[in-house]
Amino acid sequence: MLYSRSGLVSALLAALGALARAAIPEHLVQSLPGYEGQLPSNHYSGYIGVGELTQVKGQLHYWLIESENDPANDPVVLWLNGGPGSSSLIGLLTENGQIKTGDSSFEQTTEDGVPKVFYNPYGWTTKANMIFLESPKGVGFSHCEGVESSRDCVNTDESTAQDAYEFLVNFFAAYPEYKKNDFYITGESYAGIYIPMMMDQIDQDPLGAKINLKGAAIGNGCWGNDVGTCAFYSPEYFHIKTMFLFGHGMISQTMYQDVLKACRNFESLNVRCVEKMTEVAEQAGAYNIYNIYDRCGRDQVASERKTPFPELLKRLSERDFIVESRDSLRSLHPGVGEALNDYECGAETAMDAWLAEPSVIEALHVLPDTPGMRYKKTVSDLRPLYADLFKKYRMLIYAGDTDGCVPYVGIEAWTRELGFNVTKEWHSWFGKPDFEHSLHKAGYAIEYDSFEYITVNGAGHMVPTYQPGYALSMFTKFLNNERF
Figure 1: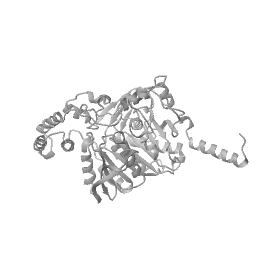
Figure 2: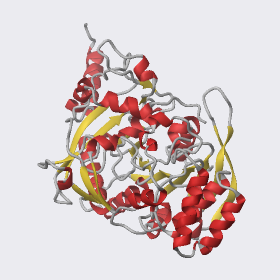
Figure 3: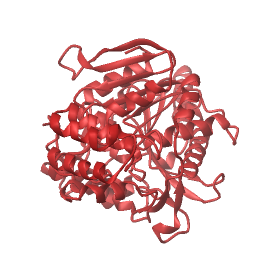
């Protein structure tokens, strides 16, 4: 092809721009097995080293999917799943990523038998550059260096925050074109602990990176290990759980009054209270703890294990435990059985099968079969830190209202009890359930002078999975700084 002088200059500038954007060219994903056609935007997947702050060297796997809109100017958003020990590829492939898995993945395999992955029109990459980070070390494809046993890769709440901050420093050094963009952190569940602690590290900025953090959105998140629904076997946990089940018509009025009496209005625990809570579990029956109206029971492997209620609480209360890497690709909380949904089932099962394909592992530039990790829950109550962060950053606390794991009633309570000024009391907010319909009531909201709390109707623990349209509406409003 022949170029004029101006055309040659334009071509050279375009080539230089392409090189500048491919800061880690070997991490560029050339194609994805099982995905038909060209990817809607650039994908980068690989490892970024951490460990300078914690003195425990490791490699964190990230998957960057550039915005389908305007990657040069759109925000950069980090996504974290919780656990602790759940891979953020769960979010990418079953919640808000550009591609998704499901039962259809097995019905439409490639000639080589690789499960298909499909475009997700509700992916958050339609609005932002998304980084899905497998954190901490030992989760998914991330790993500690030089260890052979999961027990030897030890993480705490503090070290996880330090490693995640160091990852961000190294990421923006490798992708300097994004350092000027607005940066946000999002996530769910135990990320309610990961995210504020990472934000605190960014504030302290021990490596002098000056990350352009603007805010965070946290869904159905824990607010500490000794408080709320993440303090299993506590009066507060029993209280929140009972209110949630009674409010959703899962236990009788008589049972509710009996529990109040036995638990002495949840001021303390006693033997009779624990016994009555076991009766509550029996009366509520089998349901998916992540979404009480869900019927994808066969895809909830943990739900098939019928665990006695006291034993279930004991397991959930463990502060020091091992997570094998193969288990981190599934939601970690044990279920309590199989419990109506209009989304495709089989997402996690198909994700497991797809990520196990050698061709997929090669395309993502990762190592298979790495050891897992040992995790120690070390922080007790993060409400003081949250109160401080609410004053500095734009924050959204959201909750799917059919989540029985970290129910919205507890989240409303702790955010209200912080004492911030309410600028608009409980009211409806509106979003689009899909691309065919106009605005519908998507949930409820409370506006505070420093942050917002919202619910999402009909959504469980993983809000983008169960209500992808409303989740995208929520994400868009948050990025645009629109009130709910």
